[in-house]
Image 1 (cartoon, one colour):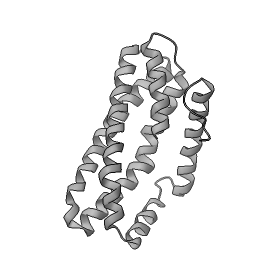
Image 2 (tube, rainbow, N blue to C red):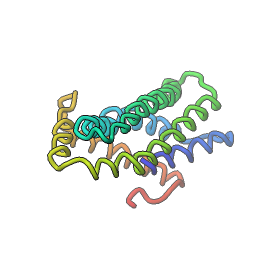
Image 3 (cartoon, rainbow, N blue to C red):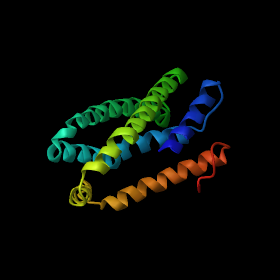
Length: 177
């Protein structure tokens, strides 16, 4: 996720300099974060938080992550809508795209940092192997009748494609490492 955010930042900086960015990367990253977060990433985290709140009442403060996910969803939606204007060929000012993207990027980095520092260590400390298995079982019940592993693979391929394109455009490190 970090590398995708970095690829997006590069394109937004290009746009901010008045140059032509790779709009396919901007649109692809918007699609990735808007749909992947909803279908896979935040779903798993919400299940982790729910399990922590039910089974381990002493970590009830973790519920703030569900509220943060709603905030991230709203910011991702604003960014995705801005990118959709590009896709449709509709007018949207560069400043609107830049503002929506930077707002999303900043909030996503902050959220990821908080997860790494708080949510994930707490989950590792408190959840049992049976609780982790239950979470994985719930994830396998994809609303589109597609096994979760296939959904994750689909998004991994999209991520790899976007990173390869960004690398080809001169950004970032090799998509293989």
